[in-house]
Image: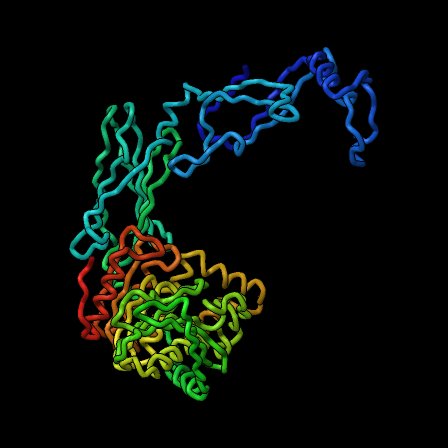
Length: 537
């Protein structure tokens, strides 16, 4: 048996193995007789084995294991053939005994050999930190700290150590755009079966969101890092509006152009999507630039006047229907803006983020923002809807759409954006690799353009510049660990809203909100619209 010693369970290299094997001539004899052969010529040369052309015929004469001769088999095993993913999301090779067999099938094995992968015991103590995983307990429910508080949390291990261990606990702290702020080192010595309980305090130098990275370090080796974000005084984050002087006129003129387009509403009943309490419709209408847009609309079958919730969709989201069995006292409308949702399969805009960036008049979001208003036109036109009770909601791009619609259309009585997209572009691109990468690609294809050229156009579509025009109440949901629409950019717009508002932070969520958000949002809408609030089941 061959033994392979590895110094760590992390294997990043291939293993080359040599086996010596003596061919069994009896094996060839029995195989030939079973096939009815009476003679075998060996060795012979089959020219078709030349690599310059394919094989023509196989015969025993080609068998590299000549009867009675010893041969060495050399093969390579890669980590992918030996490894697996562990609970730390690391690709590792576990110690153990492996069997390698070669032959034409599982029933005709010509070569069998074993080899062992063993851990280097001398290196085990040095690699102890690889198995350490940390948890945190933050001294604030939503991980948002306010003056005079300091940021405070406790670090412990997910599991007590199985043997005595000592290492340095490292805590690195940066701003959300990765500017280093502090680095703390704590010597740790833990007895077998014990856990770690280390309190960490940090006095933030300014309002904002801070990145923490906690890991163990010993003899140059590091454990997997526990990474997380914590907020401090987010409502004091200052990101002033950078709207151009013609911002308001630009949108008034755009709205006037939309109003010239006849909507030509068309509703098609979808019986298979309807329920006992609601009908479902496919809706078509025409928007800015006389572009057709679509949506799905559900309305109660019972006659009456109903409030309506308009849902705006996330970036590139697949189309979805309102739940025809839910909210029997509301109409609901899910809008697909141009080239997205229902129309995504026939999208002609390519990457919506950069389509038409040559000038603000042709930029994709000029038309898309008007689609939001045309959607409000539609619901306000419906006889079963109380046009004084229109509310909007959406997440990610849909959150940006909800903020924009509230800013541009005063028929909306309340908005509930969450994990909001398209806000505070200059800071946004310093925090997240995407969507910055989409604009970098655009600049590479258009070298005559500069970042300042882009920012001069994007300022007309920046949610933080829309925010001061919002006059209806809003609530906002934030995923504190969001690396797509980071909390900083959520608050950049929120802090410029002057109407009644409230935020809800979900500390362990990434690009999402917690389950409680949906009940919070519904209750908020019901309160604003003076509808009965339903008890939770």
